[in-house]
Image (cartoon, rainbow, N blue to C red; front, side, top):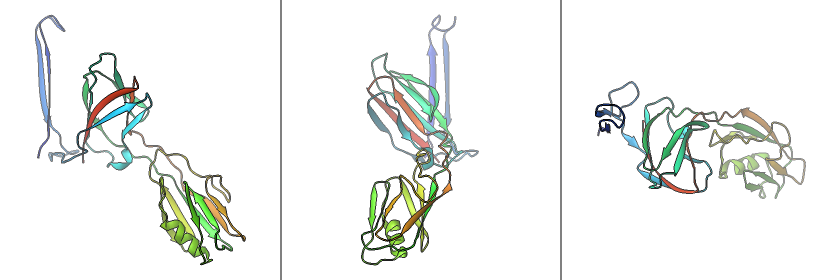
Length: 235
């Protein structure tokens, strides 16, 4: 089903120009370089803020880059001084004051997600551990390097996914390109920590350097408590 957006600008004589002014236009929201209508939406939602911190509404990593996505935003406040600053990542687009709304194009430019590998070697023993991203892996009675890799790959990490590259290597990939925190390349790391009873090691090597997303959609309220209404139309 087609989505049509319409806008009307009306000004009485003398308000903006000498004569009365009426401008109106409408368009069907279509896919990039196509006459096919956009068919996906995030659904209409509201976000009530609790501070003047910056809030992310949509992450570019989660949508296809360089498409004809459209973003609807509205400041629901009735207090004239209250506003939101709208940004594509760190690039400020402008402010929406009380009652203001906007329909904006969005290209969802992707970043590059950090990735690194951990190579497990030497002698691992029961109760040896590997700690990363708040998750502790403890080796059971099967005292092999391959068993440790299996446990590391099977674990669930809040900020990373992990796959088994080989019987001795696990490769981690960040879920978010804007999370630029990554363990340092080398045999030891403050973030990936192994504890062994023997001489087991977990050697870290960066495989992909992170690059932040160019345009996550963010809002920054000018006051702590306010509510923004929003919806994304996307390919």
